Image (tube, rainbow, N blue to C red; front, side):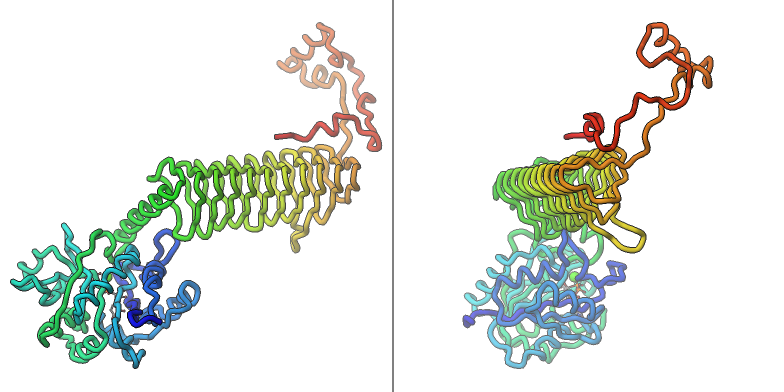
Length: 508
Ligand code: UD1
Ligand code: CA
């Protein structure tokens, strides 16, 4: 551990009343990561010797969240929220041997970058200050603490918005709530804080005046980009932070070689990764740990959560959650892929197809209007339109296994558990309850009856009857005759189906 590795204290005990929420403020999310998660991913880059997170309101759920996103961070409980100064005191008391630099950050500043934090620590150390405040100059400083400087331009104190007089309120330099402190100076000043202010709280900001009064130097570093220090206190600021972070993430991917056709309608989560030459079309939302491969085209209108999209694959107007879409595979439009769906290379899930827990093998196609649940489909197979993998018997789910180069006829119901062997066919409209061996044709449907002349007898005078009559006069085959009853012309046996059974599937 290098001598300069700082101790980080993140303040996250406040309720965040202005959010008007049942969820602690720091757990509200911006682009798939909590406010606290954003802050911790920035502080982590400082390689701190330790990271303490002060928790209070909703401490169990905040602590649980820390275990998920930042297991290296140590939660310390502030039982009563007596102010930011009190919160830091509680944190420092929990690290008895604290020395060197202490970085304090609010848990509600999700746009802060690790680079700015590192600069703050460097500036603090170079100047040998007892404290260095990260500040910003804002056109609208309302709500923030104001930085009051002396005639020599040195920082004198910080005055909270609600405790400020008109002259102080007019100052545009604000306290970001992010600081670097000398540990010893901080510890001694914290012991002398009072709650003599409009909120009756111990303000961390009062440490500044205490240090100055002691003759110690307090510096300030003005942030280049004021967006970085936006503190999220309500849902309006949450949405503002979202817009800024979204633009930042989009620009990062564009600079890395990804084409984003319409950044304004594209949302890419903080933990998504995209390879160069991928194209993100408008109205696309990529969330969770989604990974997009080189040359893939995603969108328009794709919503992917925790998905893997292979190179050169396409996903249009579709939603997918926990799905793996192979290289060159094609999804959409209007497809719903649920967890456990895996499309191998060159596979297709087309319009109005829903799939879950299903392996769709290399080059296999489910082009239209099907439900594929709990299935293993081999290579080069085709699933005809409106096929349903009937996986649920009302109590349990069962799997269906389809071999290689199978042709499932349109509107086949595959009643699981059932297996269709390699190279086998099913006839359109079949309800397949028994395994179909390799190379066989499974036919399971009622035989058609054709009742000749029925319309002429039973629907006399209708347009249909007139059309039939006209066809009869022209001598069209099959239009005449009024004998009724079953036709003998349709006698295709189950053992020897002709091409028409097999041709009833649909193809891409
Ligand atoms: C604070 C600063 C203000 C600064 C602003 C920047 C003080 C007194 N004021 O004001 O100068 O401009 O941040 O965003 O420090 N917290 C605790 N325990 C407490 C109180 C707060 O852990 O007892 C945590 C909150 O959860 C939050 C952070 O400290 O993450 C800041 O508290 P908040 O109430 O948001 O302070 P501001 O009023 O924004
Ligand atoms: Ca705040």
